Amino acid sequence: SDVCSSDLSVSSSSDEQTAKQGSINNNSQGLFTFFFWKTLKERPNSSLIEIKKIVDKDIAKYQQEMVLHATRPGILSRS
Image (cartoon, rainbow, N blue to C red):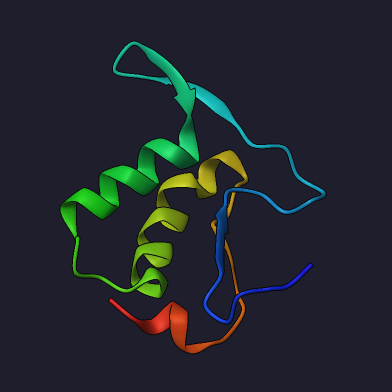
């Protein structure tokens, strides 16, 4: 399959990990998803690298880490 030159993948776990579910504000949801969207709403002009630093702090206690894969490095630093 062809890979676009500006593809980006964002996830909460690598192939060897399991994503974590939790209850936030009485809603059962993915912890990564909650913190990712919360951070993106609070800091809409941040680059993905900046967002990753914040989200990683929030999900570290759940043994999770935001995982970014890009088809080219410049994608990650763009805001």
